[in-house]
Image (tube, rainbow, N blue to C red):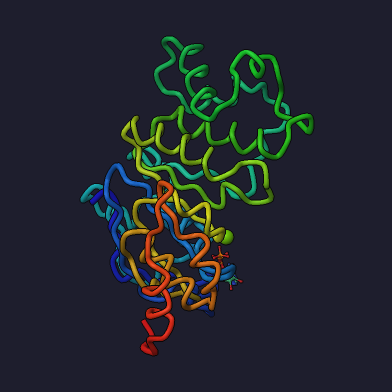
Length: 265
Ligand SMILES: Nc1ncnc2c1ncn2[C@@H]1O[C@H](COP(=O)(O)OP(=O)(O)O)[C@@H](O)[C@H]1O
Ligand SMILES: [Mg+2]
């Protein structure tokens, strides 16, 4: 396992409120692992805690990265080990040229231009169109997100945490995400994909369902999605949307049966 979360408890910095309530799950190396759950269920808090941002306090449990206990490590050490977080609210990178921004995280600067071109093409942007541009309001929301992702990919981290990469966008569709993420996988990176948009999660291999501070289930993604739909009362959506590679994940009868069962997770 690349990432292991064991009995993790996160409180707000003043310790008054528990945001993450003793959760455990693991992320397999080379997989796309989605964290799904409604707004306010603790997904961003989890992302920031794995990255090691100081805003939240770990009040119990442990985080292991490739077998190393990183619970007490700071953000810089975690980044050195190969963890990268793409921000939900893009950092203030306004005014930088696009190639400069992408090059910031590239350690080995040999063949720099080729590396930037490669990163841009992975996120489906035509490199020559973006080389002379600057990060400013002339970029669309979708372009910004892709450039942000290109910068994360260019660093070649072992784990990329994407917090709502689709937020505020309707232009990136899940098929495009699938292409991008499959290329990232080919480069042997693992993706922790945080989203509350069900259809984006369908590109994931595995998933964990967060529900107001608890991690209810970790399993193959369609199973996680099925349980999410059940908890959220989304039966029709479930029948309509749970397809993978063009095939239905569960029969309608099976979905009916799952929705009839009373027991809670
Ligand atoms: N610094 C904070 N102080 C108090 N409550 C917080 C703080 N940060 C997050 N929360 C609360 O914790 C819960 C989880 O938030 P968050 O991790 O942003 O959820 P998600 O990303 O799933 O929408 C929310 O109820 C949020 O209001
Ligand atoms: Mg969030």
